[in-house]
Length: 123
Image 1 (cartoon, helix red, strand yellow):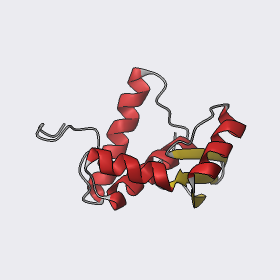
Image 2: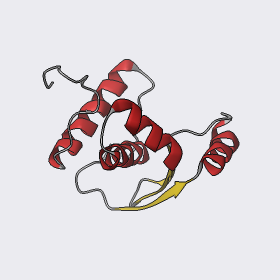
Image 3: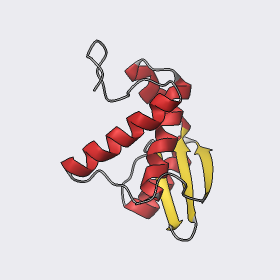
Image 4: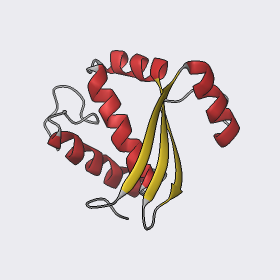
């Protein structure tokens, strides 16, 4: 699975709760809005994907976690992009690998580890 140096064309859209719910229902069979949906169309020779972020969900999650909204958006864009690159988190080992990649990429943006509870040491 590519990461460094992967050529990509990724469109990021921010939608309201109604559109987020409709897209999640139509494409995933889940009747609720979710934070980010990744629609990946190609991985080679170019990664082509759409990321759809649901603003009300992202805002609610950031507020609940006590993190700056910009940090949470950055996290979800990275998370969705990793999905577009073929990463997944359905199994514990995959989830751990994906979380470590997210954490590393966020650190490059000076954004704290979103998976570390406040007051706990860094991984």
